[in-house]
Image (tube, rainbow, N blue to C red):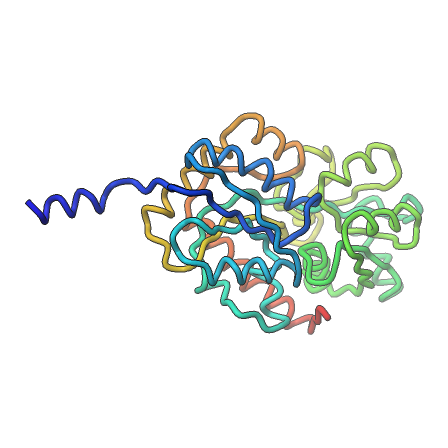
Length: 311
């Protein structure tokens, strides 16, 4: 009887008994914060406990990633983590964690393509025309991004590597100044997040000539993906995953993944994410692990081949 009782107890679903900490590697007010604030209250409904956003900014998200990696694997500390600290930064500077072994990945929150924008003065209405300008004047075509080591920079570097063109990177401390200088004409091109770019394109202050996903983006009808403009196989997207420390029990992983998927299927959240250009679909922990591993390898190759430094 003791053996049967122990087995039944071991198979009981995990239910948290205290608040869950959702670690975020960025400051309040940004894109990551908006995702966390939308997601947390919906996950609370499934988990039955508060999900509290804990801001730990710094080092491009690596400080927060380290906190998640070193937490107890009990389900009470998880992170909303993007690609920078998991697939980009570890190739360029030393971090205390290994993205491929230090985490239990719990699910993909969203994937987000970027848009290639140009100042209205740029004589390019599509990607090939922009590349022709860059080849005619190597290093003279400047592009802005939200910062060194960002997915925005990596998307541009991947384009340069695949087309043998030279673009001049001008990093900024955030998306707002990067777009402001594009509108002012101080830089000619920007690799930008979808949501802040939409009103700028609609008002004619900038022009969209390509998107970085393999599929078109509804927010920019008629704007073709880079892969359909002569750069076969091109795909560069930002993403958020939920992650916990390695060694989390399978039952806890399943419970948090189910809470995430339930939140992602909430019509209001789903519609909001899609309107901002995000690709949202319920998925498995295995799919999240594969996404991190694929991009870790991809961006590692680009960083080595392009000899990139982020300091």
